[in-house]
Length: 550
Image 1: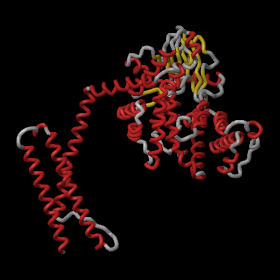
Image 2 (image 1 turned 90 degrees about the horizontal axis):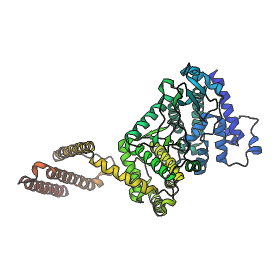
Image 3 (image 1 turned 180 degrees about the vertical axis):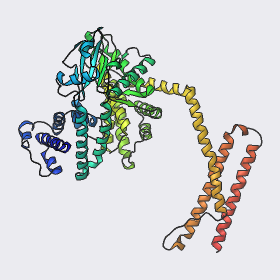
């Protein structure tokens, strides 16, 4: 039965792709496949671009493919900008499931919902690829938003991800030129993410964590809806209904008496706190997920995608952002590498030149250039130079670009550097003064010093082996006799270098030690080091003369 369902779904996928003009690729991947829809694209869709037809095909294939397209839209270093632009349009572009179809889920998690709620509006407030949101009112007048999972969506997604992965494997096997995009790995990452999103309890816990963090930071004008766990479960999430308008609806925001510039600053500050202080941030802060309430609050919604950034990565990213904001090209490249990004040596000069122009354009244009535009330019450079970013950094860059777009929509004159740079510098200053961090740094320094202290002992062992004739260099080559002089010279230089290194490290430890800051011991150490060096050089010279005589 499962096999017949899979085959039927394969045919549906192939039919849709043929419908939108991708029959050539279907014939390459599945030779002999026939469909009555193969001529439909010429009649109905010839006026659309290839990328627009990809987006339309994903929409028709359903929620799993819509979510997959949304994931692809975050991989700006992999795909062309025109495709990314089309995939970004997939947001909230899904059909509505009739209310009767979600009643079984309500019955499962809130068996007495008909008695608990005075009303449940059958028309959804929002429809997403995995869920729909309904307005409900309890007996005491509390207004809730019920996020209900689409019926049978889990089975559909599990079936589709298997098929998508098999298609990705076919692409890698039959289209070697596509392997650079790592289709199978991309699908595997998507599968992990979408399975997390199917568990609404994670969504609720993320909302509560974000709410706690915002309150602890004293950001009173940031609102995160309260979660009602007594009505919630894996497939249903009940939360406080918060009225408001999209953050890009400027006319309504102004009509409500709000100051868009002030809201832009509040929202941007909240996001900086999420990333750089808490290390836990909203991963999809587009205009639909950031609302403005009648009270002037910035409201965060939909916590299915949240990012985590550990302390060491936060510090590295702060350094990178400061380098970007100060238009320092060399520092920017250094900190990009520090994030674990491999930059090919043969393309570094070209990248440096392009980055220099982009950073200086951003610095000179100020408020006239959106910060997300700078990030977009950098990602274009990465794609052009075949530079891959770690997935967590890609997610963070996408979130930064989205929130920057929201901020610039609210305040087109926003100067990102003036808003963010002082905050990041203050974070660094606070971090340096933090006693816990100071203690950690002292412990790290102690470990490094202990490692250095072991080096002279290890070098001493090597030197002892060398003096006893136990250090050998075995080379298998023709005409070894002709290489004898070269080998001897190399070994002598190696030994001398090891000795000098040991002396330097040893003396450094002596100088750094608090117990040897005064008296004759440092002088004795220096004199001893010079004597050792003279003896070693005399021995090497004597052995060299002896070998020449032989």
